[in-house]
View 1 (cartoon, one colour):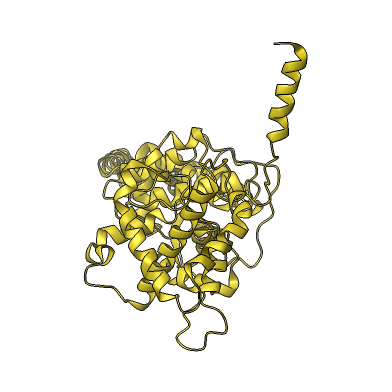
View 2: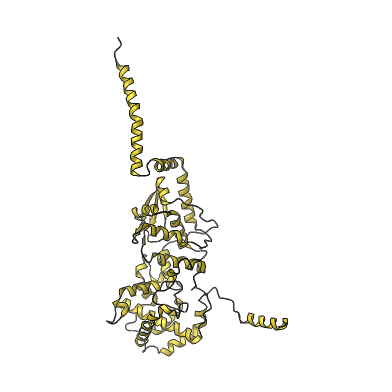
Amino acid sequence: MSHHDLANEITAMLDKIELPMYAQCCIYRVLYDICKLNEDTFTPKVVFIGPFHYGHPRLQNMEKYKLVYAKCFSERVSRFISLDGLINLVEEVEPSVRRCYSDTVELSSKDFVKVILIDSCFLFELFLRSYYGHWSQDDAIYLKPWLGTTIKIDLFLLENQLPFFILVKLFNIAFPSTMTDHRPPSFLELAFHYFAYYKNLKLTPQDVSISHFTDLIGTFYLQPLVKWPTRGCETLDHLQSATELTDVGVSFRKSSSPCLMDIKFLWRVLEIPQLIVEDTTETFLCNLVALEQCHYPYDSYIIDYVAVMNYLINTRKDVDVLVQNGVILNWLGETESVANLFNNMLKNVTQVRFNSHYLELCKNLDRFCKSPWHKMKATLRHDYFNSPWQTAGSIIGVLLLVLPITETVCSILQVLQQPKQ
């Protein structure tokens, strides 16, 4: 091949390339170095949504239920819009929807539109049935609670998303504003209801703007702060563990704040919002960490929170301290599992900046720990009062030292008090 032919071939290749539209991208493949550590936390178990896991052999059993739900929804809205009308809308916005995905979607236009439309209709019908409680007696999702729970978990996985804007467009055209009787709540209100288990804040749909369901779950935990902490160039190099902090006199207390990152240190008390650690906690936090790593690298408040918890928890003893003080509600049983959860979550994660609130908090804790009096207290506690037996031995040792001195002093006083001859 001549240089001229090679140049023409390379030019043709370059002409086909389109620069990715990062401003629109919001749904990501989890970075390989993060995903390989625990692939199960990022992979749907029963239902795929969107193109990334389309055709996965393990998820084919759910496809018939998706089609049943999609059929029921199309019949539900048939007096307002035909299936052709829904297809036309998806075809119109197909380029914008494709640009929401970080990886090039290799599906043909026909297959892509089919995936987006069927998955959207499945979600609409699922959320409506959940909201109104209109389940049929042959509905497997209703009859098998485990299936409903697993689907809910699958729907907040980062790789398993549809762009929220297309869901809203389709839902609004299916239920037009001119509809006067029995018009359902907005799709965002339905999403609030469906994911209500994760909504521990007093939020309303008017308070949020989201890209997809993973983004919604993160918003549920972070939204209520009136003013977000600034982010500087510093990172957190060190923070004492929960056991070490206890040794120097720091007390832990469960905070009443519903905001996950609202950690405060006041008057020797470290207040931390309670975290329920259960079977789904790792999946939940890992996907929020992955979202921030890909989409919010300079506003990674969940990563900041996990980093602080990772420093506080080194061993099962640290977990015990937090459990005893109500900071962690451990539904896993094994404290070792909780420690491993936090110790492994930030492996291969890049933390660009750290928020100013946590930096100041950690500096205050460090100053408290370096106080001479608190350091002496920690030494005493560690060397002489580390366990009940060690405490008992230390007390006995002190008594054995003090008693002879006391006896000697008493003898001297007795001699001094004797009358002179």
